[in-house]
Image (cartoon, rainbow, N blue to C red; front, side):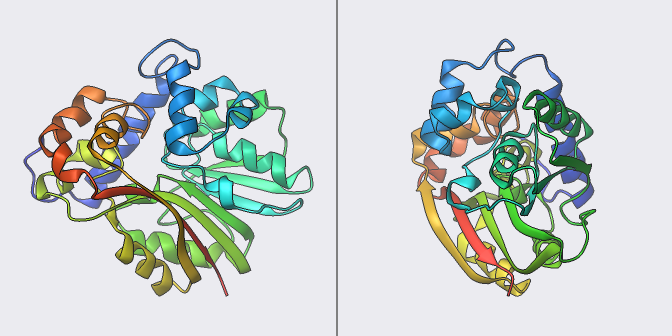
Length: 283
């Protein structure tokens, strides 16, 4: 585990960018060949909330490189013609699903800070035969998106990676149209050991930068969002903490590295870590 007491925002961003680039650039999954393993599908269905039918309709590469903690579209009622922004779009699994829901008259923008992810998302959208998608390279804290241009914002296990979440939510409020809605799946926590907070491996593994649920919701309200509420929550026991954060499903893809960062704290983290689906809207 890294011994630094505090990581700078630049260190965090560069570390996260490097880990995700490494994860998606490897041939196939980070743990196996270029196929969608039965275990991967089972994990996405049981822990993250996609249905087998949804996964069968997605290009295999997008499924194999899905690093989320939930399915934000499970509770987002998208309509044809709407414009959707996916913050941290990765290999494109949620972009593809959203693009099919909004149809040819709608549009989905995938935003990611990693060029390797942008290229992978473009390839998967092409494989899916979609023309109503666009991928943009950019930072969630400073989005290259026009003011008041978005009907729906979705995000899947990404905002926890941002060092300045206040900036992210201010940007969310800026780009949403009046009445626009948000559905986020993200990791929230209780008390975390300082060793986890100061570990770059834990940050890249979706845990080091996660914050308390009440604080998360308050930051959204402070940005001007209303009707902020948790609509679903999965609390992780020791087994789930071990399997989720020590595996490849949350972006780190360096199972040995994240294991070394968390092994000593698995029992302590049990019941303190959850995946939450959070809904809000811009007035």
